[in-house]
Length: 577
Image 1 (spheres, one colour):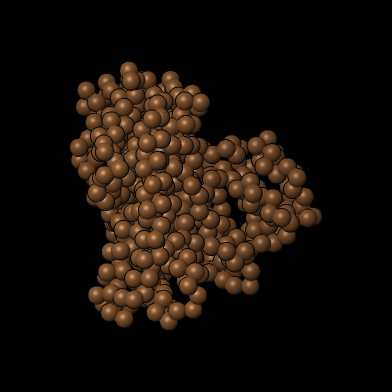
Image 2 (cartoon, helix red, strand yellow; image 1 turned 60 degrees about the vertical axis):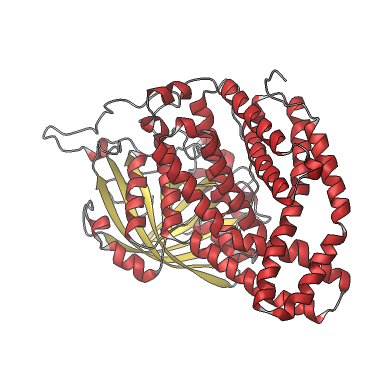
């Protein structure tokens, strides 16, 4: 990569697979196979006759494996010369001024393939780079790079078949500039020795401090971040150094590439959000393999929505990130018996903390768009409702500020980096005792059957006499149904689709009705807060509650029917029922 120490720079095109591995999937020669326990004494790094680590002989990183940590300029300047950055540095480093222009075909062909193509000036040299990657996995990317004679593309120089596939339909003459980055880059190469205490192997890491601007669409955005890229050796060392930096300074994990941020500027649009994808657990998988797939999916869902949640312009960003954190917490709860108690407590507590920090933003989004908006549309101009709207806007803004502060906090960054590290090393195996490891090596289907049946029975018990349940009782049903739904979605792919479809459909209808009642209950609490702070809003609060209260009878009738339909639906897993 441009800016690497000459001793570690790779020449020519990088022959990497365009399909980059997901977080947690083995991607280096010294990664552990999914079903194998970690070696009791992992091999150390290659050494010279004198016993020194032979850094050049460490295995090269397959593709681009990096973490970006963003922070204030003054913070990064101080961090750059801190012990965390200098302890393993080969030298004081060097500076480069880099100017990069990213291009695409009209219509965004490369963007649609989640690929980028850029030309970069480095002194007198010009370099063209093709990158590929998944927005939900900012750590692993494919990268191909080669020098060119001038500031113009020579696409034929990309000879790797995967790169050629990625460039299918791309014509150099038709490419148009989308964005430009201009940065002052400071570079240090870190040589990290192996650490038997953590299980990390030796590694060579390039640290690059980039400060400058992204320019697109007639506007610009500052860049202030440290990129840590694995050049050789064990990926675990990358996460260890990232964790040390997060602990030393107020940093956040930057989940969007410079290109993705530039596209948002060019389009004048907020970062994209996404729903959770189907969890692809194989029927022949072990409990270990299934947990790896599920926890990776939860973290990917979080990462895919973090930028949109921090941006705040689209309410789905906060909503989907919150769902991702709840799914993560549910996954940890589901597999609690095979996790070390300390790990379970930490993950459960930290994921709940971050989800709770997003709670105000989500509650006020729902109140404004789903509860207040229809009342204003139905009643037209009303001074009291307009005043209430002003209060809601302020509370909604404050909720967004709280969410952004949490996302940008070192606590959130530490949680995410720790998760990546834990997933990369399959840390749950190393932390498991003999009994837990035996369960991890067992088949997932029987494990899933037991969990699903127990969760279904708990939901049915909570819903007994549903028609006459109090609001608190129905809230309990909603919570148990939510956990059952996450569990069902985690394991649905283990069973025939014709058996799961009806169950999931009945569950979704019931959850939707229960969710609306919960939104109204939350609104009542929020309106009580507002009325206490400003009695003038009492009439407007009454209008909102009255409006939604009018349909309570119909909603209740539909809710009871939804419960009865769900209760009559046969489970899709293997059960004696």
